[in-house]
Image (cartoon, rainbow, N blue to C red; front, top):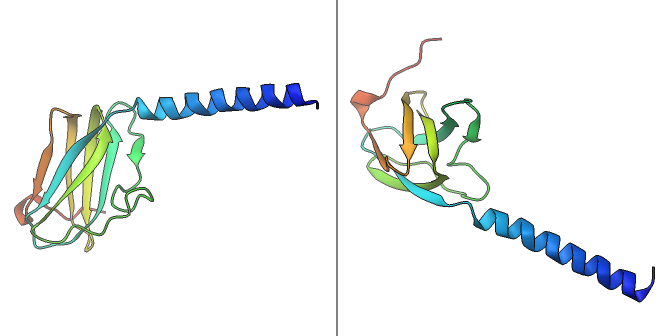
Length: 123
């Protein structure tokens, strides 16, 4: 490979990499707030696309890019997700569950979890 070919290869790679980073930057993330007014630690927050039930993130609290702790009782946590129609499932560390189907981000921005709204799933 001569010098000209090497420069052309490096130029092409830089354009490709710039295109990849521009694509990521085009995705807008919106804040959603989880308010834990229950007496339980929340250890899992999952968002599913309503139409396909594919998981947006396996567990937003444990995602490598977020690296956040459980949501303790009477704490609030802000998470960021792309706009879309989702189902949400929140699980406490001791097995209680809370859920809501078909909510729209960014229109809905906050969910409050209380002891009365949690339930134990039937197995």
